[in-house]
Image (cartoon, rainbow, N blue to C red):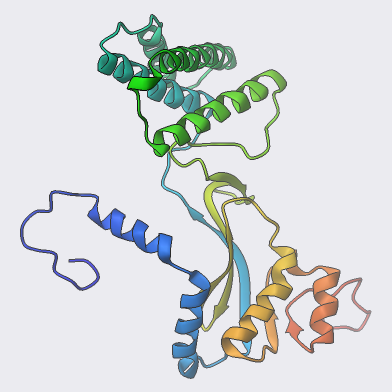
Length: 287
């Protein structure tokens, strides 16, 4: 059963069909257009269309927690698989590498409950060297047998991602500092770390979303896989809220939205906010 449709009593051969349907829908979906249609239909049932709540959240992507060693190993493992497969198709010997030796050392490292800093440095240095070697070896084979090899765009895209991972991880290893636009997954290269400062999860991986809410119904105002500051988006959010439900008289949001620009704009528009007053309270003022 999918979306109220019985797909059939027999077992489906393609177990990824639901994911394929969702992906196809996502490619064609314009979130602003569909939200306008839904808001128009729901407007008669909204009790307080003049009150908007706003906050930011993160739509987490399903992926294991990334570390530098883990990311390098995933890149090495994929590259070695491509080297082996290419050599098999061309019926030529596979270039010598110490992949199996590094594989044993990597799994021994991952089984450690507490990973010593020296071991982490050692594994990182070894995997950087091995990944660089595999990229060069595969490049030589492709140059030599170019007329016999044909690859898909997906393959070339993944090669570009792995080369970028190698470049970024080298800089991180040499400088000890993070790099901009850092890749944390070779299969989901668009995902970026979102630092939110929560007690349980200080860093999340997925899309950051600025949400507006009417009577418990959320609408997406802005979505991005790159981190952004949601504070300056209050004015845009209120303008978008007006296109959905008309006049806005009250806004409730976190302290991060309470900037001087947002306060002055809301005052000029006669919009009541829940922002804390600036300055010290008066002697006889109720707290």
